[in-house]
Length: 199
Figure (cartoon, rainbow, N blue to C red):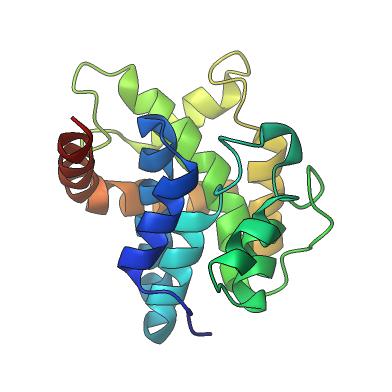
């Protein structure tokens, strides 16, 4: 699996259709988490593909929330993105806003980790540190069980993603939290640079 875009081109493409810092940060988070998973699961030679798919997975969400995963193919094709990656991007909305089913391990990881990064980040913002660096898996489990907390993050999708991968929920929580800890500082630095450009 090879990406048709460089990382710089992919970030530029994301920023063409996404202006909200929240959406850009989410894209960067999922990108870095996917890169971590690629290395962790033995797909190091596909890290760039995993990362760029993560970066672009919500490309159409800010402008077309009602057509999420329906508009993405058009926006991505226009930028020269290959059909493999378009399928991977759309498969993260499987059963919600897309009929494209996650087939390879990368797509299953994206499906499972996307929602979970949102839940973990929302939990981090409630902490005095506003960081995942001092968060334990037990905190993630507690927030996961509290249905009122970050209600927009679907527990069913997270459960379904873990099942697709053949993992216990705990394993998905542990790995995704580790992935987010590994890249938090890098994302903060990149967001600072992006915000600086826009001022």
